[in-house]
Length: 98
Image 1: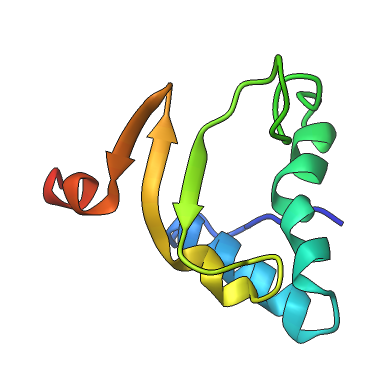
Image 2 (image 1 turned 45 degrees about the vertical axis):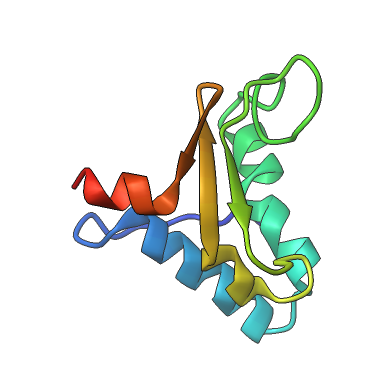
């Protein structure tokens, strides 16, 4: 199973979080739902050799969250920092740029 969205009218990030929450609501453990948006999605798009997991030699943009989304999927939205292209950003700084 791969997490995804199919609505062109809604925010992709929000829809993806709704998708993960629905997977958990209907019986999947959070630690099993998260790879559907990372590892499995990368594999299905043919880029699993470069993306989808955090390991040497792969590209990775990271989010640091408060809590543990492996145990509580709702914690995935509690983003504190983002690392994109090797640069660390605090959420407050990114929100002010909008």
